[in-house]
Structure formats: C-alpha cells, structure tokens
Image (cartoon, rainbow, N blue to C red):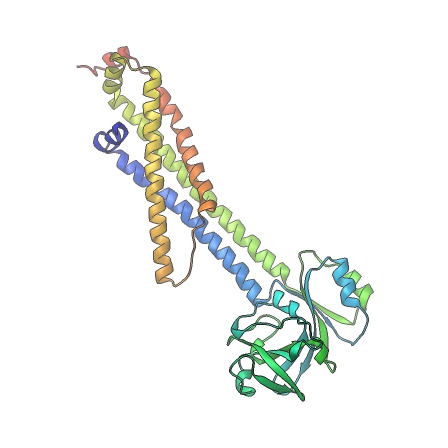
Length: 357
C-alpha cells in the first residue's frame, strides 16, 4: 500500500510517466498484433489464389511414370495428377482426392471426392456453383449425367470459387479414370524446394511441358512484409526505450526534491539498501501499471477494429507475453542508476542542501 501512496498521492508527476509508457507499450503491442494478422492473412490469400501451388502441364500425351519420378526426386508429398477435358459449357477435371490438399475448396454443401472400396468410387462428382443450374442439381446426393454416365453429387462449391489456375464455378471434378479422352494433363503440387528445370528436361523433354511456379512471388512479398514488421517493431522499441529514459529522468529529477524524505528515513534507521529497493519497486510498479493499462487499451482497440472494420484480429497471448516481459526488464534495468544515486545520499548531504530547515 505504501507504494500506491508514494506513486498516486505524493508523486503526481508519475501520471505523465505512466501515460508516456502506456503510449509506447500500446504502440508496440498493436504493431506486433496487426502486422502478424496481415502476414497471416496474406499467406492465406496466397493459398486461396493458388500462388503457393506449382504446376507441371504436359504438352504431349505420355503413359510413363514421369509424375512418380519427379515427386520422388523432389520428395513431394502434397500433389495430385490431373486430366482435363474442355467441353462446350464446362470443364471436366479428372483427379484424385489429394487435390483437396492442394487447392483451397470452399463448399456450399457436401465435400470433395473421397476414396472408397468400390472400383469406381461410387461414381462421385463435385460441381462448381454455376453448374448446379446447368445440371438442375441443388443438393448433394442427387444424380447427374455426364457423357452417358450417372454420377452422384457429393459436393457443390461456393459461388466465386477460383484461383490462379482454375475458375472452379464452371468445373466438375471426377476421379481421373473417367477422363480418358483428355486434352490436357499434368499435376499440381506444393513443394518447398527450388526446382532444377534441367532435371525436368531430362525426364520429360525440354519442349514437352510448361512449368508454372508462383512461390517466388509469395516468398518475396512475405519477406517484404516481415521486413516492414521488423522495422516497425524496432521503432516501437525505440519509443519504449525513450519512455524508460523519461522514467529515469523523472526519478533523477525527483531525487533532489526527495532528499528531505531520504534523510529522515536514514535518520530513523533506514539503510541505503532500503532506499535502493524503494526506488526500484516504485519504478517497477509504475511499469506494471503501465503494462496493465496498455494491455487493456490494446484489447479495447482490437475489439473496436473487429467491430467497425468487420475483420477478426485475434490476440495471441503467448506471442505478446515476450514483449511485455522484455518491456518490464528494460524498465527495471533503466532504473537501477537513479535508485543507486538515491541510496547514496547521506544525512549530511540533506543538511548541506538545507532540506531540514
């Protein structure tokens, strides 16, 4: 209780110190939270657009295991071969159920193709949103006829589903054993390794494929955003350091005014260690108050952003606790010097400065 009394009842100048600290801490936490949200959503948008997906499109038909060779060389785990056939009003994409691990599909109802124990996988089909009007099919488990074969609709995609490679609204997806008269084939994949096109040339021929890789675009943008985030965090830390210096300056400037208090306490038996701890605890308590008020302010600001901007910015406690702890450490370290100066004041010094008059 005596700390609260010292800070709020006798040291009104601490109010400005707390305010300055709050502003710098709020700035730091907001930069960290909002920049993390932006980077996360940019990554998600890239995935939805297909910019994290690579594609090898074969220009001539071939029946060998060239896809298996490429996936083995580059240790590709997420991939899906495809065969395409462009019809008059829609595109048929023959694939396996692994395509759902490559593309981001949003469903109005149902799900993507699923492997079953049956030879023809129950003749499953997934249709784009526009095609539910074309086939007059508005619910899953209905049957539609495609090229003389009845298929059971297991999924209907949301309206406006598309990415870099396909406009899904006008696509149907079936298992690739049904697409034998395809006009285009290849495979989509997600891979972290950089490709050596010379090896692909040796495998399938220099003029026999098109290689599409958008990862460099994604990596460049994410790198740029991370750089901007680091710079903003660094500037925010500078403001925290400046506010810490203000606390130090405030402590040093009050030492002269508090010499009488220090002299009386020492005359009554207080040791230099007691004075030292008093100043240290006062300033730590100031930072704790600043941190508590800052965290509350940040939560309110994030709540208002979510309401008025209609987005969902979440606060990762574990991601921000490190910054809060670092701020507290900086504040504690910066106040060692003024606490030490205060503890070194003697009763003789207070008398010389007419503090007892």
